[in-house]
Length: 245
Length: 383
Image (cartoon, helix red, strand yellow):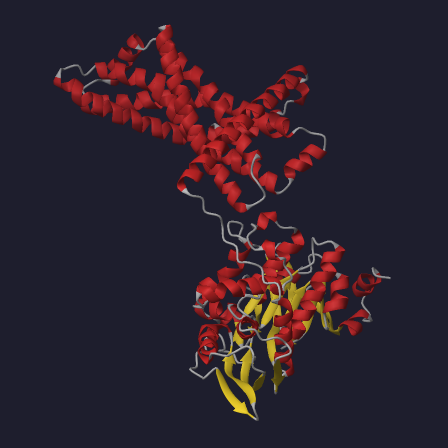
């Protein structure tokens, strides 16, 4: 299977604090991978390093065949059009309506004519399961679950090959969270998307991910199918999975 | 799906070809059916002039890539011309593409209408702004009442007053503002002295420049300039601080701890500003007269000693006191408006910016309006 992401011996240091001490793994196309770890284990920092927002102290990251931290700004921007990111709080643009939020990537990055963009935006919103009356609302009028869906529609706009999700179910009630899980699974299977999910939601891990990578004390302590990671012999992992009887 | 340059590919392939095989209408999809090409694909579909009554077979054997945007254009076109799942069948489609088209068909059955931001017409905007202003003034009024009640409560139980918070606000609004207030007033003193001096020199009335400077600076200019600077500096800061606290739900946290946000946040700022502004006006008085004195010494042949003697002789105490007495009134308006606008911030980024801007505008307008009211009233009273 083709490799879309390779993280190679990443070291991250902030002052005296070492966040990552040689983190390495690879992700193949079409995989649904969850990155787990306790609070402060550097999951979100690693995600930011992969998508080119925070520079690691040492090590290299290869995303879709390009070395993220040796690319020029232009190359990085071209690369960025090929993956989508769903931020923790949705990060919707508060001055734009829902439909305009989803239209931004089309308007800024493609020359698709407006008469095709408008129905496409409507379709993207329907794709993530939003009701018809949501498109004219402003993000402030939406519930947490709906904001996440709009953010997902925006992240999917340019047909990304990889979708990165940062704590996608945090702040959602269990019912909305499980609905969101199902949506991600359907999209991943139907669109052949590669999903890279940073999460500490155990239910999400079990119902969505094929593979789990566990970070602890700056290192990868387990990496493999969810069932294998679940039975791994590590005190933190045992406690983590024991939380669900 | 996997080719790395897919987003930039722009081949001139015949996206779709129609052939009749064994009395069946076969649509051969060909090339890279991806987002950058959807405009061309939509044109190609339209140019085919398909009729919905026919039976179609969609053949995917020549298809290189397919994404949801292109899939959506195809499915929507077929639906628009009246095709149904019964009249369209697929052949030689990659299983992934088949799943994708099935998902597109399932989800597009209820496409939401595309909404745009509402843009009001000219008259509507004026009406909306007037109503908004009316509501704002009304709520300002209620806020003044609430603050007055809290202040009364504080007078009964002085232990609730927060001296530390007040002192730290005082440092920010007064001590830190001294250099800028002094500089601006000094320069205004210089400018006025120049303008007056040029006229006065013609009549040999150089020394009267001192009268003009002292009166203008102490009674009008220093209070106004200090207030405008404080409105821009501290007013904006108050709104931004309290607004951010509102966004982060800190205000709710203060309330649930059984504290009053007005006592914790508003009264210390109000007290600090009401003490600070008269002091800043005094700094401005000194700096403005110093500016006039500097020009007098360099350009108008008035020795500093003479200038000061003249100021001492002609500047009546009442002008100086009126200038200082206006300051706490301006300060109260600035602090109340700034805190109020901070508390009115909604939970989004735009609102914080709008309210901060509005604070500065409202404060400056109110300072000028109040100053005009003072000028007219005092004139009539003969002070």
